[in-house]
Every structure is written in C-alpha cells, then in structure tokens.
Image 1 (tube, rainbow over the protein chains, first blue to last red):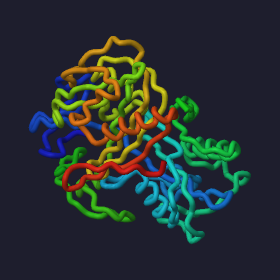
Image 2: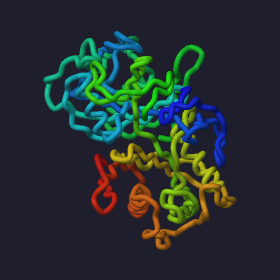
Image 3: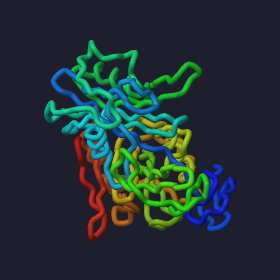
Image 4: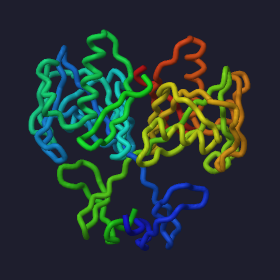
Length: 188
Length: 188
C-alpha cells in the first residue's frame, strides 16, 4: 500500500493518536488505512458417509484437494458465504447444519469458518476454480494431497466427532513453522 | 475508493473474468481491489454473577454501554483479539473460556465473535475509548442504554444459557430494518 485510495496522496506509516500500531496514514486527507484479517467461509458437504472435495484449478495449491471455501463478501452472512462458495466451486446445493470450525491463521491474516452441511442432491460438478469434484469415504480421503492445513484439521476433527457420535464446535490456530503449518486446538 | 493504492491510477468498476461481482480494478497495474467484511472480536468478562460493561467514550453510540470488543488486527488470533480489546477498553485481564457468539451484520460488513471469559482480578478501569467500566448483575443491566443490537443479543443469550445451566455457541444475523436492527438466531 503506497497511495491513498481516496485522494491519491502518498501514504506515510505512523502511529495515530490513541493507537499503538503503525498504520498507513494519508497526509492529504488524514484518512487512516486500517488493514484487517479476512474471513474464509466454507462447507463440509456430506452425502451419507461421504464428503465432497474439490481439486483446485487455481493457485495456490493447484491440483490439491480442498473443501469448498473462499473469501466472504460484503453484504452476505457467514452461512450465505459458505453456501455460495459451495455452489461456485462444486455447483452443489447444501443445507447448512451448524458452525463446525473456527481457525485463526495469524501470519496469513485469515480466519476460517467451516460449516457442516448436507448435499441436497448428487447434481454437482466442477466450478471454474475446480478441476474435479468428488465424494470421498473416510478411508479414501487423499490426506497427502490436501491443499491446506486448515482443511486437514477440519476433516480430522469431523471424522473424530463422527466416531464419537457427537459434533461440536472446534476452535484453533494454524501457525507457520519452519517446515510448514501446525494446527493447535484451543478452548474446546 | 477512487485510486489504486499501489500505483495511484484512477480505478474503474467492472466484473473481472471468472467473477460475478463488480470490483474496483486498476487499469494501470491490473490489481483487483477486493473489499471484505471485518471481524469484531470481544469478550463477556465475568466476575462471579456479574458482567463487565464499558460506557463508550467514542462514536458511534458515545455514552452507551457495550461489552469490550473491536476490530481484529492482522497477526493475531480471534482469542488474542478478544483479550486485547478487553485490556484496551477496560484495562482488564481475562482468561478466555470459549467462543460464545458469532453474529453476521451483512449490511455493515462485520462479523462479531464474542468469547466467554473470566476476569483474573478486579483491577480494571476505563481505557481511552471508555468513559466508565463497571460490573453489572443481570437485574442491573442497562438494557435501554446498550450500544448495539449485537451486544443486547449476546447478553440475552448469555443470561438465558446461564439460567439453563449450560453454555453453547450462538450464531445469528443482525439485519437492518426500518426502525433499527433485528437479531435472528440461526442454526443452533
């Protein structure tokens, strides 16, 4: 970020009054340009004992499998965002059950919110951001070809809860380490 | 938003390839400037049967009571954001129990995430964004002087759960109507 998006003046970096962090500030119009994390909303689409996964057609992690999820938009709710992403990436319609996972990725500036959802029918197909969309039983999940640590953790929590016969909310953090990303459950 | 924050060219509004929404696009450097909802993270700080509320010293809703909460920052987790906001607004230290409320405000572009938390001690005081900080029993909550519908809904869910003897996650949407904002619980 270099220029003010309101007046095009060159920005400076400074700590505003009554603040404790450096912000981009416009010396022209005094606007403070805050930067905040984004929400990635998605679904765990279930059909009987199977889960719908999408093979990514875009970077990052092109060719790896993921749950349908993406950046929440303005003017929608978190549930609507999860339903929309499932429709866009898998051309699949779902009924959402409840919020299953809330994972923070502090170094990436993202918070994942994943909902448990039931596929309404088997009429699904690859959206423009997917190469392939497919149902997987637990024993067939391609664990070594999953796109993101958040997706791995979500699926692990899901299958563990299913074995216990009870689903509950999972919260946790995904932290970048030397060799990749580590998931740590928090609170629950 | 009028100018590109990377190259200062004047932005145009158009639907990018493989997208379905108008975005601000830079004709100079081709950057697409996405806009996404922000997370407001906060706590329900509890001491015995009392809740800590803050009287706002800033707009909007100056002079009204709220739970400590504010915009999540980059490089922190949702829990860290709730703890930081409680420290900044009430100079209060808390131990967080669990995620209690996730409320979407689609017309405002915000998602509230409120955590149940226990005050570590009674050494609290008004931060720079608060006029006053005070513990309230349920019967003394200033329901007519609460700052936001999200805060009212959070407190109503909290006291209802406390009566039932069991706390669970609450999800819902706060929708702007003609006469103000309406809260609707979803999913749980």
